[in-house]
Length: 153
Image 1 (tube, helix red, strand yellow):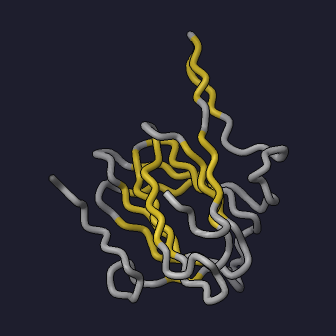
Image 2 (cartoon, one colour):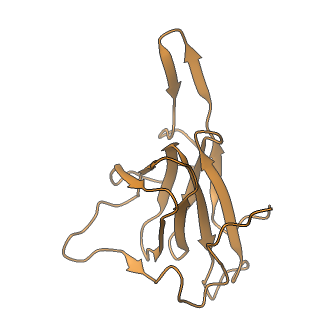
Image 3 (cartoon, rainbow, N blue to C red):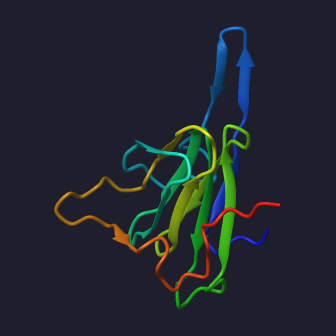
């Protein structure tokens, strides 16, 4: 798949032993690393869409550590060589991956597992309660060329 300009991915390696598992997600010496703002956990119930939203200043590093999500990213940037493009990633327990989402891109996800999905986000900025860098769009009624409906068959 051709990636939207600025998106970076990192396949995550799970290291099992008799005690359990270890999975490094993001390191300061990773080529994909930009800077640290904060870390938070978000959960999503089966079939629920969380999106669309975007940021003007921060990048997001998104990892699904439990369950599975369909992470979708749309490029509305006027100056981008990939303007109008949509990327779709299926990430989580069965496909551990980190996705770096730069500023200016619409993004959201849908929980596609039968159980609640746990998503870790590592944004490059701390959340500013008085002036959040958070811009929301209705997940279904918008001009983004994407339909969240599952495609069976």
